[in-house]
Amino acid sequence: MISVLVVDDQPLVRQAVRDILTDGGLRVIGEAASGRTAVASAAGLVPDVVLMDIRMPDLDGIAATELICAARPAGRPRVLILTTFEEDEYVVAALRAGASGFIGKGAEPEDIVRAVRTIDAGEALLSSTATRTLIERSVRGAAAPVSGAHREVLSRLTSREHEVLLLVAGGKTNQEIASSLTISPHTAKTHVNRIMSKADARDRAQLVILAYESGIVVAGG
Image 1 (tube, rainbow, N blue to C red):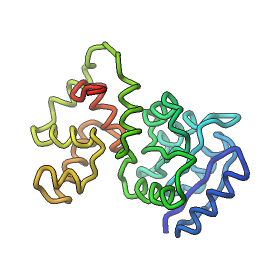
Image 2: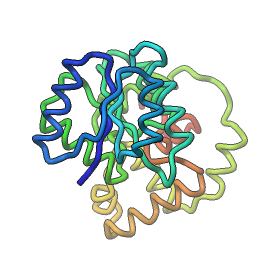
Image 3: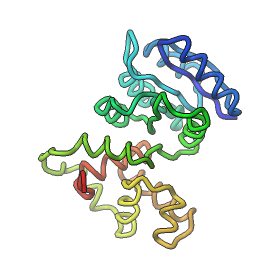
Protein backbone atom coordinates (compact mmCIF):
# COMPACT_ATOMS: atom_id res chain seq x y z
CA MET A 1 0.00 0.00 0.00
CA ILE A 2 1.31 3.44 -0.91
CA SER A 3 2.40 5.45 2.15
CA VAL A 4 1.89 9.22 2.25
CA LEU A 5 3.09 12.11 4.41
CA VAL A 6 0.59 15.00 4.37
CA VAL A 7 2.11 18.47 4.78
CA ASP A 8 -0.06 21.56 5.29
CA ASP A 9 -0.17 24.25 7.97
CA GLN A 10 -3.97 24.07 8.25
CA PRO A 11 -5.30 21.24 10.47
CA LEU A 12 -8.63 21.08 8.65
CA VAL A 13 -6.89 20.69 5.29
CA ARG A 14 -4.66 17.93 6.66
CA GLN A 15 -7.65 16.07 8.06
CA ALA A 16 -9.62 16.41 4.83
CA VAL A 17 -6.68 15.17 2.76
CA ARG A 18 -6.08 12.30 5.19
CA ASP A 19 -9.71 11.21 4.83
CA ILE A 20 -9.55 11.44 1.04
CA LEU A 21 -6.37 9.38 0.82
CA THR A 22 -7.54 6.77 3.32
CA ASP A 23 -10.87 6.37 1.54
CA GLY A 24 -8.88 5.97 -1.69
CA GLY A 25 -6.95 2.99 -0.35
CA LEU A 26 -3.74 4.84 0.52
CA ARG A 27 -1.95 4.83 3.89
CA VAL A 28 -1.23 8.15 5.61
CA ILE A 29 1.75 7.52 7.89
CA GLY A 30 2.26 11.05 9.15
CA GLU A 31 1.39 14.73 9.05
CA ALA A 32 3.44 17.91 9.25
CA ALA A 33 2.41 21.53 9.74
CA SER A 34 5.64 23.20 8.64
CA GLY A 35 8.43 22.73 6.17
CA ARG A 36 11.05 21.84 8.77
CA THR A 37 8.78 19.26 10.35
CA ALA A 38 8.12 17.85 6.88
CA VAL A 39 11.84 17.42 6.19
CA ALA A 40 12.38 15.65 9.52
CA SER A 41 9.31 13.47 9.09
CA ALA A 42 10.25 12.50 5.54
CA ALA A 43 13.71 11.45 6.71
CA GLY A 44 12.34 9.44 9.62
CA LEU A 45 9.29 7.86 8.04
CA VAL A 46 10.48 7.60 4.41
CA PRO A 47 6.99 7.66 2.86
CA ASP A 48 6.46 6.78 -0.77
CA VAL A 49 4.93 10.21 -1.48
CA VAL A 50 4.95 13.56 0.31
CA LEU A 51 1.87 15.67 -0.43
CA MET A 52 3.36 19.13 0.08
CA ASP A 53 1.78 22.55 0.55
CA ILE A 54 3.84 25.56 -0.56
CA ARG A 55 3.05 28.45 1.74
CA MET A 56 3.90 27.44 5.30
CA PRO A 57 5.63 28.95 8.34
CA ASP A 58 9.21 28.14 9.36
CA LEU A 59 10.25 26.75 5.95
CA ASP A 60 8.18 26.96 2.77
CA GLY A 61 7.26 23.96 0.67
CA ILE A 62 9.78 24.72 -2.08
CA ALA A 63 12.75 24.77 0.29
CA ALA A 64 11.42 21.70 2.07
CA THR A 65 11.01 19.89 -1.25
CA GLU A 66 14.60 20.67 -2.23
CA LEU A 67 15.93 19.32 1.07
CA ILE A 68 13.80 16.18 0.90
CA CYS A 69 14.73 15.42 -2.71
CA ALA A 70 18.43 16.07 -2.12
CA ALA A 71 18.54 13.59 0.76
CA ARG A 72 16.10 10.92 -0.35
CA PRO A 73 17.38 7.33 -0.58
CA ALA A 74 16.63 5.34 -3.72
CA GLY A 75 14.40 8.05 -5.15
CA ARG A 76 11.99 8.02 -2.21
CA PRO A 77 9.96 9.85 -1.23
CA ARG A 78 8.55 11.55 -4.31
CA VAL A 79 6.98 14.96 -3.76
CA LEU A 80 3.58 16.03 -5.05
CA ILE A 81 2.81 19.72 -4.60
CA LEU A 82 -0.70 20.58 -3.39
CA THR A 83 -1.40 24.15 -4.50
CA THR A 84 -3.41 26.38 -6.81
CA PHE A 85 -2.77 26.94 -10.53
CA GLU A 86 -2.42 30.69 -9.99
CA GLU A 87 0.94 30.31 -8.23
CA ASP A 88 2.94 29.93 -11.45
CA GLU A 89 6.40 30.83 -10.19
CA TYR A 90 6.04 28.71 -7.07
CA VAL A 91 5.00 25.60 -8.99
CA VAL A 92 7.88 25.78 -11.45
CA ALA A 93 10.35 26.48 -8.64
CA ALA A 94 9.05 23.38 -6.86
CA LEU A 95 9.52 21.27 -9.99
CA ARG A 96 13.07 22.51 -10.27
CA ALA A 97 13.59 21.66 -6.61
CA GLY A 98 12.70 18.05 -7.37
CA ALA A 99 8.93 17.79 -7.09
CA SER A 100 7.36 15.30 -9.48
CA GLY A 101 4.28 17.38 -10.19
CA PHE A 102 1.42 19.27 -8.63
CA ILE A 103 -2.32 19.21 -8.13
CA GLY A 104 -4.74 21.97 -7.18
CA LYS A 105 -6.45 22.10 -3.80
CA GLY A 106 -9.76 22.32 -5.60
CA ALA A 107 -9.30 18.95 -7.29
CA GLU A 108 -11.85 16.19 -6.88
CA PRO A 109 -10.99 13.57 -4.24
CA GLU A 110 -10.53 10.82 -6.82
CA ASP A 111 -8.14 13.08 -8.77
CA ILE A 112 -5.98 13.61 -5.68
CA VAL A 113 -5.80 9.86 -5.06
CA ARG A 114 -5.00 9.25 -8.73
CA ALA A 115 -2.28 11.92 -8.62
CA VAL A 116 -0.58 10.23 -5.67
CA ARG A 117 -0.69 6.88 -7.46
CA THR A 118 0.72 8.48 -10.61
CA ILE A 119 3.62 10.03 -8.74
CA ASP A 120 4.31 6.80 -6.87
CA ALA A 121 4.50 4.90 -10.17
CA GLY A 122 7.35 7.13 -11.30
CA GLU A 123 5.34 9.27 -13.70
CA ALA A 124 5.40 13.05 -13.48
CA LEU A 125 2.04 14.73 -13.17
CA LEU A 126 2.59 16.84 -16.27
CA SER A 127 -0.10 15.77 -18.68
CA SER A 128 -2.42 18.72 -18.21
CA THR A 129 -2.29 21.79 -20.41
CA ALA A 130 -2.18 23.92 -17.29
CA THR A 131 1.09 22.37 -16.15
CA ARG A 132 2.80 22.77 -19.48
CA THR A 133 1.62 26.37 -19.62
CA LEU A 134 3.24 27.06 -16.26
CA ILE A 135 6.56 25.66 -17.46
CA GLU A 136 6.33 27.59 -20.71
CA ARG A 137 5.72 30.81 -18.80
CA SER A 138 8.75 30.15 -16.61
CA VAL A 139 11.12 30.14 -19.58
CA ARG A 140 9.32 32.44 -22.00
CA GLY A 141 11.45 35.39 -22.91
CA ALA A 142 14.61 33.86 -21.49
CA ALA A 143 17.22 34.75 -24.08
CA ALA A 144 20.14 33.07 -22.34
CA PRO A 145 22.12 30.72 -24.59
CA VAL A 146 21.84 26.99 -24.11
CA SER A 147 24.24 25.98 -21.36
CA GLY A 148 27.19 23.74 -22.03
CA ALA A 149 25.66 21.13 -19.72
CA HIS A 150 22.40 21.09 -21.70
CA ARG A 151 24.26 20.95 -25.00
CA GLU A 152 26.37 18.05 -23.78
CA VAL A 153 23.30 16.11 -22.62
CA LEU A 154 21.53 16.63 -25.94
CA SER A 155 24.60 15.51 -27.87
CA ARG A 156 24.52 12.17 -26.08
CA LEU A 157 20.91 11.43 -27.00
CA THR A 158 20.10 9.20 -29.96
CA SER A 159 17.66 10.40 -32.60
CA ARG A 160 14.98 8.19 -31.05
CA GLU A 161 15.69 9.60 -27.61
CA HIS A 162 15.27 13.12 -29.00
CA GLU A 163 11.84 12.07 -30.28
CA VAL A 164 10.94 10.61 -26.92
CA LEU A 165 12.14 13.72 -25.07
CA LEU A 166 9.90 15.90 -27.23
CA LEU A 167 6.92 13.71 -26.37
CA VAL A 168 7.77 13.72 -22.66
CA ALA A 169 7.94 17.52 -22.84
CA GLY A 170 4.45 17.44 -24.33
CA GLY A 171 3.20 15.66 -21.24
CA LYS A 172 2.80 12.26 -22.89
CA THR A 173 2.65 9.09 -20.80
CA ASN A 174 4.67 5.99 -21.69
CA GLN A 175 1.55 4.49 -23.26
CA GLU A 176 0.97 7.59 -25.38
CA ILE A 177 4.63 7.71 -26.40
CA ALA A 178 4.44 4.05 -27.41
CA SER A 179 1.36 4.69 -29.50
CA SER A 180 2.86 7.74 -31.19
CA LEU A 181 6.12 5.99 -32.11
CA THR A 182 4.62 2.54 -32.74
CA ILE A 183 6.73 0.88 -30.06
CA SER A 184 5.84 -1.06 -26.92
CA PRO A 185 5.18 0.73 -23.61
CA HIS A 186 8.13 -1.16 -22.15
CA THR A 187 10.42 0.19 -24.88
CA ALA A 188 9.06 3.69 -24.32
CA LYS A 189 9.79 3.39 -20.59
CA THR A 190 13.30 2.16 -21.36
CA HIS A 191 13.97 5.18 -23.59
CA VAL A 192 12.69 7.56 -20.91
CA ASN A 193 14.85 5.93 -18.24
CA ARG A 194 17.93 6.16 -20.47
CA ILE A 195 17.29 9.85 -21.11
CA MET A 196 16.90 10.49 -17.38
CA SER A 197 20.17 8.67 -16.75
CA LYS A 198 22.04 10.66 -19.41
CA ALA A 199 20.57 13.92 -18.13
CA ASP A 200 21.08 13.00 -14.47
CA ALA A 201 17.41 13.89 -14.02
CA ARG A 202 15.41 12.95 -10.95
CA ASP A 203 12.27 12.23 -12.95
CA ARG A 204 10.20 13.22 -15.97
CA ALA A 205 9.46 16.66 -14.55
CA GLN A 206 13.15 17.47 -14.80
CA LEU A 207 13.18 16.28 -18.42
CA VAL A 208 10.35 18.66 -19.30
CA ILE A 209 12.26 21.59 -17.86
CA LEU A 210 15.42 20.45 -19.71
CA ALA A 211 13.50 20.37 -22.99
CA TYR A 212 12.26 23.93 -22.59
CA GLU A 213 15.46 25.40 -21.19
CA SER A 214 17.57 23.77 -23.90
CA GLY A 215 15.36 25.25 -26.61
CA ILE A 216 14.33 22.01 -28.32
CA VAL A 217 10.76 22.89 -27.34
CA VAL A 218 9.74 26.49 -27.93
CA ALA A 219 7.66 28.05 -25.17
CA GLY A 220 4.27 29.03 -26.42
CA GLY A 221 4.87 27.19 -29.65
